[in-house]
View 1 (cartoon, rainbow, N blue to C red):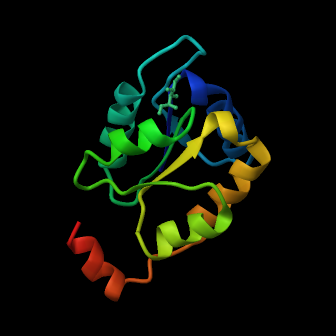
View 2: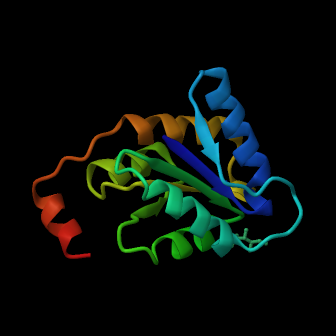
Length: 139
Ligand code: RB5
């Protein structure tokens, strides 16, 4: 399942991403926020992480203004590997090398079209294991 979370600064991009998935008949779980009313990103990172951790197959897409706050907050969870990805190459490595289970995007600095490209790469790239497993175990 794909779990969406944002603060107010990521709300608009989150809604665009949600519509993209809806149009593709892909079900998402949206843990909020549900408007542009200012909120605190750690609260939504927490809600999003709780959902992601319900099933190892789950993947989160978390968005705040820069992506920084969401990444910092989400990575407080030992089983979360949240990666701020600003292009498709980074998104690919986030999965193949880092086995990321949360993609973080910067809502104020990314258009929907680019976000969709990044999301597609993130969701279709697979963890390579091997030496990367050893490194992940050291986190
Ligand atoms: C909200 O103004 C902004 O600080 C937040 O969305 C995020 O960028 C924090 O890292």
